[in-house]
Length: 229
Image (tube, rainbow, N blue to C red):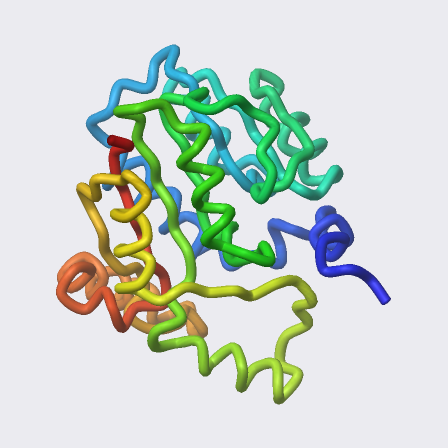
C-alpha cells in the first residue's frame, strides 16, 4: 500500500489538473494581494512551504523576492524548479525544516499544513524559521464547519484522495498562532461554500469579499496573516 507521504509524489505529473484552479487562484490572490499587496518583497528572503508545482513561488519571484521552495514530493520540487529556475528548490518536510532559526523575512504556506501528521507542529516550524518582525501567511481548510463534506465524499467514493487531511478549527488555530508569538494582522475565511459548480464561482467570490471576516468561521478555508514578535 502506498504511504500517505508518497501519495503527493504519485500525483505530481497531474497535480495542476487535479487542483481546482478557482480555489488555487483565489488563495494566490489572498496571499499576494490581500496580505502582501503593500509589501515590498524585493530582495527579501521568502519561504514557499509546500510549493506544489510552483504557482505561489512564481508570484513571489515576480515580486523580486529571493525564494526558497520546499515540498515533500521530489517530483513537485523538480517541477517547481523547472518552472522557476530562480528559486532554491529543496525536498523537505514541514515537520522538520532544514533551516536555522530566524532565517526568512516572509513565510507562506497555502493549504499544506493539513497534509502533515501534525499541522500545529508544522506551524511551529514555519514560525521558528521566520525572523523576528517577519511576516507569515497561512491558509488551511477549516474543520469547524465544512469537514463533514469530506467525510461524505470519501464515504461515497466521490474522490480519490489518499493523503493526510488534518484540518484545523477556526478559533483554535487563531489562538494557537497568538500563543506562538504571532501578532495577527488579518484573519478571515475564504469560500463561504465549496466550489463544486463553476457557474457559482462569481457569486462565491462576491460573497467572500463582503463576508470574509463576519462569516469566516463558517467558510471552507482559513487565511491568516501575522508578524512574529
